[in-house]
Image 1 (tube, rainbow, N blue to C red):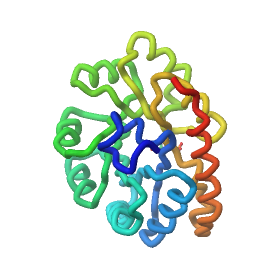
Image 2 (cartoon, protein in one colour):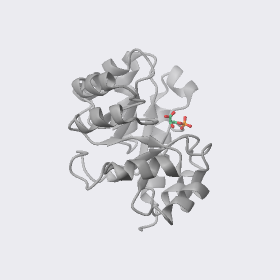
Image 3 (tube, rainbow, N blue to C red):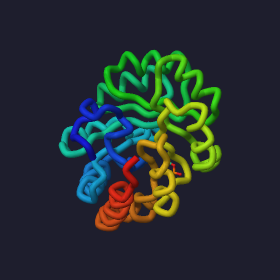
Length: 218
Ligand code: 3PG
């Protein structure tokens, strides 16, 4: 990754080429899981607010894994924006956006990626001064072909695609000029997390971080 702080790179999309998307059921898994990801080379970690333990997990990682840059994902309300930053989140990601959510994210003081899946949503965000977005659900919404098509008329928009990305297709996404990073859960297989096989998570994280290092310089 370019820096230990998301405020330092020119953009949140340049923080790390591969961002693991974490869905935690048990808060006691947060710290060992984050340590395994960081040890494997994936220091920017998105913890999704889809489980009741997510905010506590963000706080635990913030306090106990200083080399991690932890952010909150699946942020869909202003209250979640506030609670995430209070827990220590250093960036915010949403699967979609509204003007209410955008205003809260702008006011949060941390970088954010609102989610889009259509050209009209991209245009609407550009109109509001936002150029960096999550592209979700990436594979279902058209994948690399769709992103390539957007880069012609809307080259000023840059994306972090997530949804259906894995070790096999991540390199193609990372080769696109309008893709800054990719997100996904592929380095966190459910059985490895359930069995607390942190060695396997670290090894998959290491493979994923190599994909990022292999990306063509654009
Ligand atoms: C998500 O927010 O769920 C991410 O897009 C992860 O999707 P994946 O499980 O398909 O990688």
